[in-house]
Length: 497
Image (cartoon, rainbow, N blue to C red; front, side):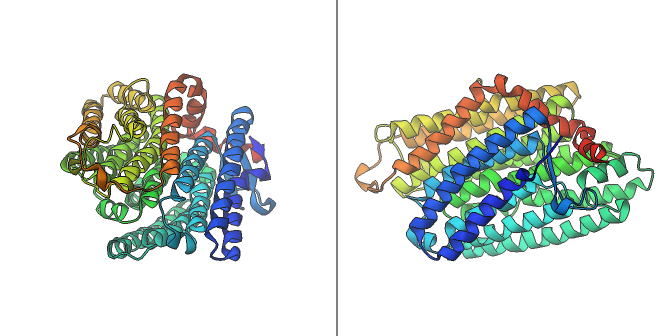
């Protein structure tokens, strides 16, 4: 463990950058430069954080020098560090993509500061060591997301944005309720201290089970887990493509991370019920996502329902919660953040160029854009888990663990989901790039260099991740340890004491 105030940098840098942009006023070009420079600085910082955590262990700082559990702590272990890096990579790519896609009108109304405020909240949620401050950071990125989902004021944005806001307000109220219940039992809000108090808990197990259900409702709603996903397909369909990519790649993953962190630290006393409940919902989410992915030819909807499949796969690993499963869940979590953003941005490029979202109304684009076509093909194979691409390793570990723990139905559904993902995306690839030639004279003569740089760049990062998976294994093994061995996460508190 290392104590270092620099652990706050991933939170305070985007926050102050966003505040500076607000004072600059409505100057889109200055906002572009500021957001891009902030992204580059964040890439350097998050890479440094990973190296520091790998060499020296978990990074911790105590705000105001009030040691935990009495003060607020920021804790970055390897799981948080990997999430910070992948979040930064995706956000930087989306910022560059937005230069040519979001439109000057939205840029004038503080689009880039809102992205940075969202990044502040997401990074804070990944980094906090305190359950109440996780709630605070959730509200930070949700407030930014409320504006982003409605920015532009189209009818569908306002309609779906209202639903999105109402659902999240209800979930946030239950979040506060769950925190109150938890505090009444443990008398603390610090993650590590809660684990230490509950490790030898001999009170009423039913109370903690009720708290577990409340927290699952909250985080499952935010992650889009079935049956709490009803808001997601419409809300994620409404905004412009860069915002969809940001939401689809990151926001659901914060909910997944919150489930993994709380269920590994707080709710292990009745895991026969709580984790089996989580496993059941994860499998149900995969099934519903697969049905949706097969039902549509609308490219955006196909990728949106693939979000559900990925959320279910990751939660399957975290519900089993042994070493193999958690390593697989971490692999697949990082993989899906990157590749899902890449797919959304590639689909966005196709839509910007053609003006159409239905893949069956397109065709023959491989001759016009071969690079985009083959990038989409590689991304599809990666998301389906074809070796040696990045999606293969996480799914392999999770399926292996499912078989080892006698979850045969879950393992089979995970394997079948790969076929569904592959079919749903290859269908788009064939229709759009190899189908009967469309009328190319109707292609919009838009600039698209930055659109392709961002989307293809993310595909390259994903391919590099897959090819380097063996080299990166020690990092993911270290990240998974905090979930299957929660005492390792709480050790920083005992060292302080």
